[in-house]
Length: 174
Image (cartoon, rainbow, N blue to C red; front, top):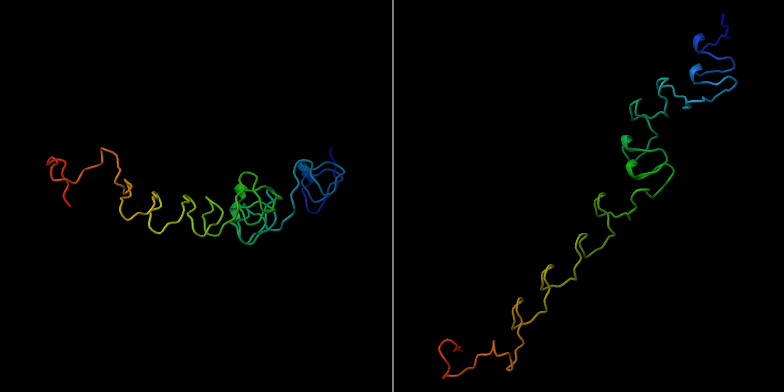
């Protein structure tokens, strides 16, 4: 009741007149090498349901183009030197979600511009005699927490006269 031409590489039940080398369910009569629903490149080592370019180091279900510096599971065709989660196919050195400058001495999750004498998280001026969290001027006669100028005319609360006639509570010995 239904007569279709014979073909060596396809089944007679899944053929449409005018098509070659593809399944009739994914074909339009009159077209040669394309499918109206799905077009994938031919590969010898993959199944007919999922065809992707061949790769030596990946399984046939997860085959993507080879790359030297990235994992085969995290790759997108056309990207180089970045993760596929932060990549857009066709872009070279930038990510569509996050663009940061490359640095050799920082982790890939937190990249900041390189600096020789500062920390990536906290930058403070360098000082030989102070800590990085609290910097005070150096002085020989003062403490780092309370500095009183060495002057005779100090405030009355901090002034103790050196006299023999003062009370014993306010007397300071040398």
